[in-house]
Image 1 (cartoon, rainbow, N blue to C red):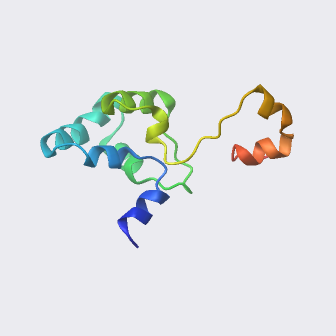
Image 2 (image 1 turned 30 degrees about the horizontal axis):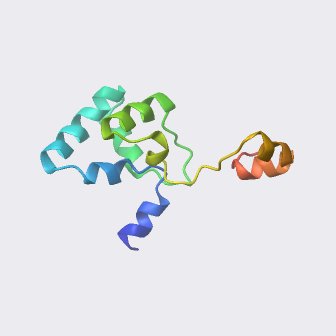
Length: 106
């Protein structure tokens, strides 16, 4: 399986952003971001490789902290397209369509 295919299966793009850093910044970030997020190194490591199928989620406050470090948006850390809705599009959706489009379960 190719590396690109693996990254498409991941839920978050954190590892992609980490790998763009120069080596010394990469090592500092990998060691200190878990401390800044107040999680264990093991938890942070799981965040890097969590797949879209897994139930594991990173809380919004932790994603915001990581996004601020990388100077990006939370949406850029997510490895999926977020549908854009406004009042008009929401009004046209039926409950079942909304559940499906937001990947919610009944």
